[in-house]
Length: 118
Image (tube, rainbow, N blue to C red):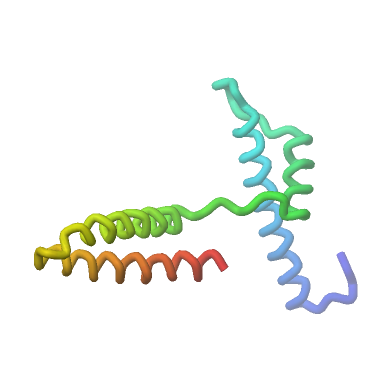
């Protein structure tokens, strides 16, 4: 190891290396799953690890969206659809209330998704 690193720097280096190792293995697993058409036991090869390393270092792939982000995006789409549907029922009290609520939900949840993706 590098002898000019202080103890906090060495700890941070170890933490970063461990995180990269985790990311590398996750990406190699993803590549293996994408290329494995058989139902047999998955096997990550040296080629998978090599390709995952290149992808991580060059940022050729975007990280997968979390389930929370996907759920928020689905809520945004549903709320936007409700906005359109309720706009056809503005002559009724519930139509106005639903329109206002769905617009607010669409804007609020859409903003949260946008901020999370930054």
